[in-house]
Length: 340
Image (cartoon, rainbow, N blue to C red):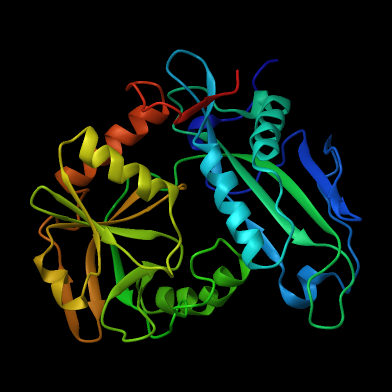
């Protein structure tokens, strides 16, 4: 196959329709065999469970062209496992984890000429998602579901480099201690939209949500886990109500086993923020987004790493993880799924 005639170096982070999507339907207690489709529209009942009671979960991962020309995905088995956990929490049928990985491979191969070339700075974003498709009017789970995967080529999340963000302590709660903060459900992101629009209107890039029980400890932002650097320590939040970020877990391993850092996963009081030297948000889209300043009302915490560029330790973490993803650095066993 030949590559699409796309200006890969100037792609934004948005949706661009590709050749095929993957779809599988759950009916009468089982999933069908699944199929590729060129139809990128979804037709469902006006009373579908997803529309009435927000039964939807999703994932996000990327396919890359490596330095030696392979097409690979990064740890899709963990996305499969996390989606299974999300589905169980919302009383949705689990899409089998082995089939999830196979479907990712199938849809990427079907869109091979949309996978950006190595060195372009672009990747193929992969969005698996599942929703209740049958009609539900009483408050209960749907009886039928659809699992789909769409793909779209995307450029770097930050054009011109990742400039440090200014974030604020949110005025709202993100997740209750026994709620759904630990799963990747659409409803979690819907509740954050008002807060992020408000933050942007006030001149901030993102919200940092404290724990809802005491509002004294760091939890996570609207769409990412948060990490801190203190000396040679990589510090991140331990909480049952944050999303188990695949990027964050990978960075923890990189910090300890590649960079010789001490990793701490623990409670982080808001009062400790001034003690850290570097801060970042981590996720699939940008890998690490550096944070230069956190604002809590009239108080400001300005990290020594500054507002011009990533701090040195954060840059090491970023370069090492992206080097693993792109095939420049030998990966831990099982991290790289070769598609072609």
